[in-house]
Length: 339
Ligand code: FA5
Image (cartoon, rainbow, N blue to C red; front, side, top):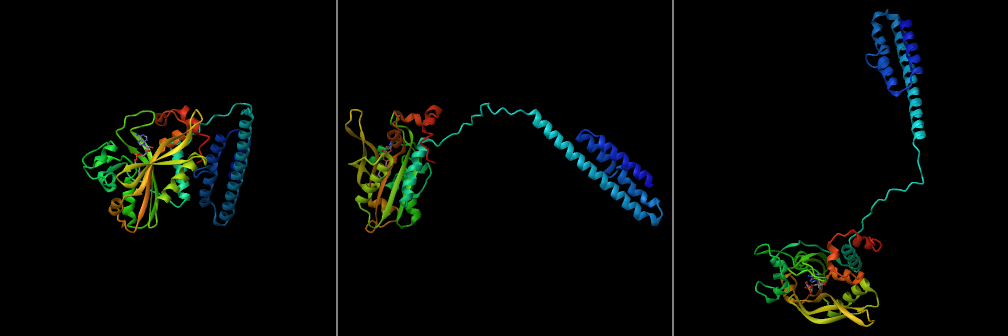
């Protein structure tokens, strides 16, 4: 029996020595060491031996097994290394070849403007609030002091979905929603988002555009606070040499109300002004409906058109460029992306 075992060992080691591929090596492992392999089956022969010979034969089978396993392991290492060296030899790397050009996108210019304005106001202690684009008449108009038959509803041509739901015409409904949420506590918020109006599309108007609303409510608010916030924002956006001009205007939700123009230098070198936003002190009725006592609290609010900022800032000649997804247009804003 011992001779048979030693013959098997010799045979296995010889075959391992001769083997040239990993697959053939695996075949040898199966032939000799698997459950029904020749060497493993030798253990079953123990029963045929007299008792006193069993331990030494058992040990011998185990040591043959280990020897063959080790030989297979070493051969495997050798064959794998050889295969690796062969692959490296055959794979020529040409470091002079051009690399792949991975196209990297960038933040849309309108989102860049929003992020810039958010950064500014968050730095001044405001929080950012959002609201739904499909809005209830209650928040879009009624709580903004425009009841059902208010003639000023005509100022914002509206996409109605049914009698109560509409695509919001401005970001002002977020004012109403936040006031109710804050339950009479002071607040400073800005609210960016998309708005919709049945305006005819032209170089400066779109039926869908973006606004950023600002609202501050506290006990000691005056018109001077509003003017300071607007000047800070305009100079941050357009440069410290810019001035703002406030013109009396009308919004049902603010009293007094103003349109705000920002200065720019015309082609002929003279100074001109362009309207970019509406603003005012929050109307007492709006405060009351939002849960604030107008005798105690005052507020200021403003609503700015994001496209108008971007048009001025980047000298864009047509608002529709922002919506066309033309990569040649969008690529021009890569460098200016601060995000
Ligand atoms: C309003 O929407 C008011 N809710 C703003 C406001 C908020 C006033 C809080 C007072 C207090 P207005 O309709 O003027 O106001 O729009 C505000 C800005 O949105 C405009 O100054 C302009 O920059 C932009 N805008 C208005 N209509 C369009 C349009 N069709 N396309 C592009 N931008 C527009």
